[in-house]
Amino acid sequence: MLRDISMVLGNKTIAFSMDLDPTDMRDVDMWSYLANNLVPEPEVVHLMLRAVREGDIVIDGGANLGYFTLLLSRLVGPTGKVIAVEPSPPNLNKLHRNLRINNAANVEVVPKALWSESGKTMDFHLTDYGGYDSFTKTAETVETIQVETVTLADLMPKDLPVRLIKLDLEGAECDALTYHDRVVTSFLVAEAHETDVVALCNRTRMRGYHTYVLHPDGMLPSKVPYGCKLLPKAENSNLLFSWDDKIRQAWPEVLY
Image (cartoon, rainbow, N blue to C red; front, side, top):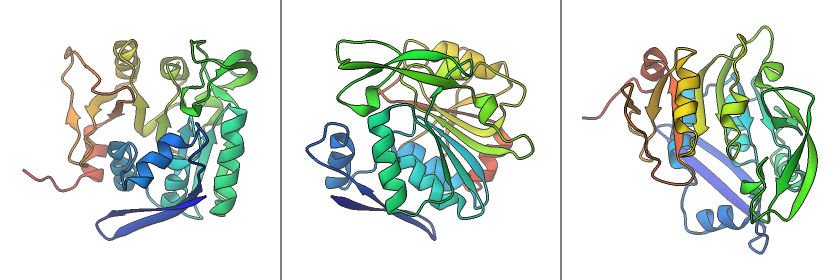
């Protein structure tokens, strides 16, 4: 069943559609959000609406059904490009379907798993809920398959900057951020799990990034002083890694 999605920031309106089945466990969370007029992960949506511009190149790591992929596709426009990385075959089927519905010709789908090395074949564990497919076997695992890995460095264009990277890799974010000199972006937003949030912040700090907490109302991100203990408020809490000058560009006005 098609669900129309519309997002507004100032004079900018972004609209797209998704094919969702309320009886399919991989769709049920997204369906529930939209059926109740809620925006999934609003803090990330606000960041993308502010930070991504027409003509940009962006990477959606862990594209799942394509919610953020489609939002980014609309934001970068026909002159931009979205690189959508998704290893799960059931999610890939739904992702391709949603891209066709929206004629998203500016999206390149990479059917691999982000990791610290390219070209490896690794066990990947599927669940009934597509958002929990991962390298880690859990009690919810229903099938284990083999997937090929790819690094962020191998996805980065050699001669063009990447404006934003989004990572939702169910615990593999740190492994995907094993840095190569070419892996630099203005805005890096990553799901931060309590077990690896310190390692994630340390890894990004080594590259000179500052850590920011995003807010669901879209207000100016809070800069986290070094040494503060970060406690995720939800299972899918996201952190932003960037620099003050980039934050000023995206939030030129501040309510106080």
